[in-house]
Image (cartoon, rainbow, N blue to C red; front, side):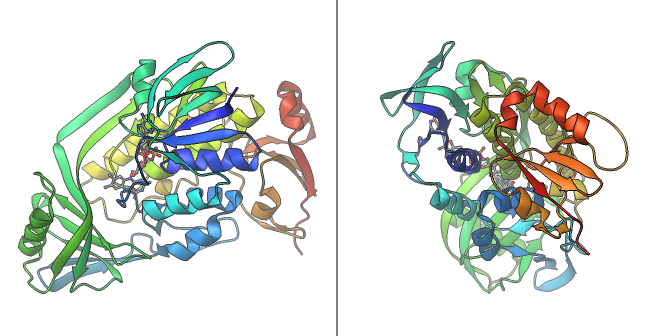
Length: 433
Ligand SMILES: Cc1cc2nc3c(=O)[nH]c(=O)nc-3n(C[C@H](O)[C@H](O)[C@H](O)COP(=O)(O)OP(=O)(O)OC[C@H]3O[C@@H](n4cnc5c(N)ncnc54)[C@H](O)[C@@H]3O)c2cc1C
């Protein structure tokens, strides 16, 4: 084998998987068809659950230093401010939820932080052009080079070559009538402390969001046509009705067409699909990048231990189904920028198979304070961890979800999945006085 895992695509999904595998000592290569990292912002909402993932992966500090919470929305008619509101009003950190609301941070910054944390560089200009698989591995051609790997993961975005080659269907709809012009612009005449919006009517809607850590605003406007600086200037002039808001230049422009689709299989033999390659949907609710990060986080430890690999699809497919419905509902609500429901934070997602109150196997392990320190710090690292609470042990998976509660359930879990026991730590977790 040339490598254990060949990751196709260095967006947030592929980079998260690469970082998770690297801390487990699993040999991998991450290749991308583009000659260089993508320059446009695209996703800019990072959800609390992704921040918890980044806490575990050891990159939360630069993320927190680069983003911003609670940016106030401001609706205008021309110059007149009609209303100001906080989509996440009242959401503040608690002991159990240290990251309580969505953070604004450009996707290119998230990707940069993940890339910089990798022990080896992303291989750019290396498109996957073909692959075959057999009982022991996958043979792929990337950038003209033949590579043999035990597993291949398609993190290659909505137009996924891997998905098409596998012949996996991408079931759903394209909403031809729902188009949005997007881009990153330098603009003078607007403060950077508000997410500025105009347009009483849907076809007149314009939003300009300051991107933290940059001098750019993300431009989003209903409309169609060839994206260009001139078109964006015209839209800003017409919809704001103001001549003091001046578009100086653009670093990225694009036309977004709404697709709501997902695969019916996340795995074919030794090949897996993750992120946009497996599901695409409305950007309303800021979920896409986050769901890709969590697909990768669900898959990483299973690839490393070569166990429970079928549970990747079993656990992530229902999440994708839920995601498509939830984001479409936000988009269709006609008010995608009103207060968001708690479900968008992705903290309540669970892989549990039983009903009932309280903590169950499959639930996210909440943070908390113990005499030994914060639970999230006790869990940090690539292993399963048994937290020995005074009222009984809880076994937590490497991705922070509860595997089993109580001694006999933990023994049964290890009995059914012996390899997991080889990657296991046990720590005392006495309740802080
Ligand atoms: C306007 C807009 C706003 C958005 N807002 C949000 C938001 O606020 N929050 C959020 O979570 N999400 C948001 N999203 C969605 C988010 O951008 C995507 O979900 C995210 O980029 C998916 O990440 P990914 O890594 O799966 O795929 P991508 O980021 O698409 O990366 C795929 C990579 O694969 C590479 N590739 C493709 N084919 C090949 C090949 N054959 N060989 C090698 N490499 C290949 C590509 O070059 C690319 O780098 C938004 C999207 C848009 C357009």
